[in-house]
Length: 518
Image (cartoon, rainbow, N blue to C red; front, side, top):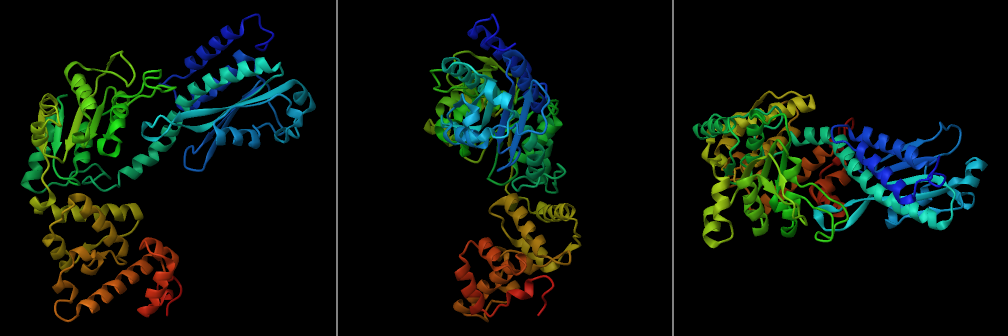
């Protein structure tokens, strides 16, 4: 039975189908299972001959995922959605109706009976663009082989499929997140900015950091709001994750929102979500970071960047546990622990009226100050060794030791960018080391002293510049294994300039090419 032979009205049929799709889109099921079930229900309820879902950039950029369901098993004939029609839909974000499939090149090779009795409809699967700009992008296309019908009926079918595309979009975004999440988690574990992401191990030798860890342990025993204070790069995000991992919420979500990475007008929507409708001028609802963290922890980074509107709504949530999506007057009751961080002087912002005093006190139930790396010198060398050990495990190489001159340079440096800078420095040194020993010349120029680099009184300014330029070229060519194009890319310079400099300093790139020793 199809939609046209049924005694049910079109509107009733469409409503029944949409309810069936919503019933299958259950958050407790995997997104892939939801999509498969939703396609099957479209075939069953609407009587479509076959439905297809094409998703772009899933799971990774430039990859495509295709799903389909039909009323019969099909083999030995091209059955997928046509590339011309789907390409047109994806490129223009407009629907396509083909009422005569026999005359369209996308369907050459189809059985004659299908070409005589079926029409084709393709609609875009639209999702919100970046930073809640209000613009939508086509994440994919939803297509169907439907029984032939007069144009007015096909247009009604198209309108229904546009509505169905919104339901599919929610599950499709969830699928992309589920497929990318393991890779993203692995990659995030090795990012700089937190002290030791790899094994969630806190390296704390200094008295000041041991005090911080005691405060983290105490805070993990309750659900009070926590405010982490300190300079950028000191590891506040990692400490927030550590606190979450030690708390009773550790099995629930940990969400992060970086206020400084959002446009000011988008912070409220990123934090509390969007309710579709005229008020928000959005065609679909979207959950914010707070809603996604339900039952778990939300880490709000750079809280000083929040707009006054977002501050007021966050204060409301901390006071009564409810919040409003952008464009909605219906409160949401949520159970989320808030951990905020700031690198600014919030007291000054409160005095100037740029930060709500009540919000400051609501966030500061448990204030924790994270000292800069220069004030905890005892942690520098243990952290450096820990990072190097983790790089060795990750790459399957051996780390033996840090040479004494290198230890002196690491210990004497003031580390203005804190743990993040130490992480990057050790990563660079490890990549340049060939025998597992980190030596002084493996460290970046910012750590070098005149004495250690032997340039104290033997080189003029011009000679020192030339020497430094030559060392940079050699290091880049060594890393690129003699490939000058890659070296130019790493140095962010044109190939022509790098080629000129290599000849100027009489450097032979072939020296660094494996198997070509000169």
